[in-house]
Length: 108
Image 1 (spheres, rainbow, N blue to C red):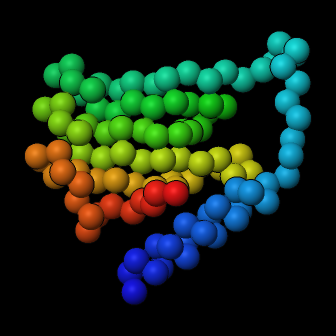
Image 2 (spheres, rainbow, N blue to C red; image 1 turned 45 degrees about the vertical axis):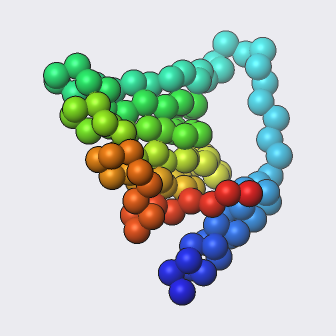
């Protein structure tokens, strides 16, 4: 039942994305917003999180690490009507294996 809810939610998100109105972006103006990779660090110098920011929103896959530098989660972000939404989450245990109870993702 839990997997069925996840599948239905994933289908709804895909439908919302595909129904998005087309919008043209003028790349010639000087007011163009930028895209860049953001990396945040813990005080000890280890990477805390990293991913792509576009127009002030997280987009694509972001990776999150604990203070020892061990990967603990990946999130995929989608932008719908200028709002950021988490589309998929993959959580990991300390050994680098996927924790399926805490994850929510799909493969097409």
